[in-house]
Length: 239
Image (cartoon, rainbow, N blue to C red):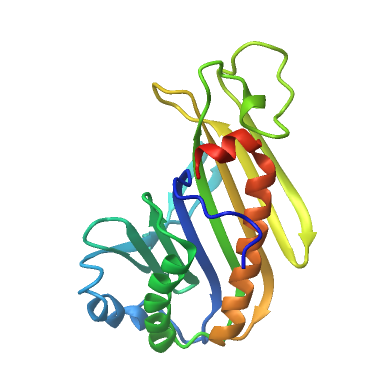
């Protein structure tokens, strides 16, 4: 049972699960070719993911930019409604849920359908990094005062905030590292983006129960940061 309340109107713009994997040495993007076809019923929109590499060389005539041909890294799969997006790559797997966010259990369930196919098709030797990231859009009150929304806002010397970028990284707690960013968002309404990225970096087997346990751990860390970042009044708006 979670120690934090479920927020029916959670301000989540995008939530994602990310696994960085170690594939066999002979793996290539062609290893993943069959997966988009196998998942086409749920993810009919498919596009390539390319990696671009460039370098700057110095010569007597000055710097010269050199770019290698794009390399295929994997595929981007999108559901018919555009709300679920999966990336299957030779270096890992990412699953995103766009707003409206439903629930953590539903997101994990949907992600696991694609992850199991990825496991079967690519045969990773292990998982090197497990992460979850939540990007929240939080509207400010008419006063524009950060202290009415955020429990420990950056110190701003009076007036309304026109532009702000604030970022910190927490030392690992229970193995979980967190990177938190708070930034103003461009647009007609005053809003802030609270971006919480929690991850564990070490070698894991591809055992489903072990991965699920680690995912719950990084999600719990994300929840602690989210609820401690906002005032009680702000939390009430999302219930």
